[in-house]
Image (cartoon, rainbow, N blue to C red):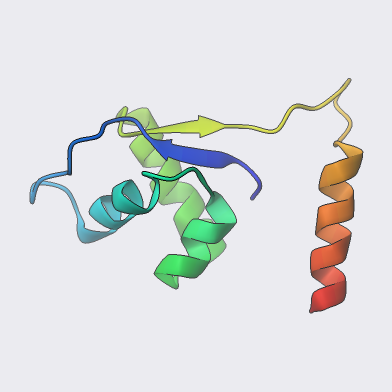
Length: 88
């Protein structure tokens, strides 16, 4: 959810790609989280994760995962999640 995504190419994707791929590529000209992509495209988070993973496999986007120390989540990440839950 907190993985950051950026377009791997500055060129626009052609009509051979799906509408969703083109939209994600355009959105990710600025670095965005998978959660942002999900919200901006009005698709479920799971769908956005699958689309981004498929695009990464095709070399269309780059995905940057948050760093984990010894397999433990970052304290900042946990605080952001808790803050988001409180806002709900």
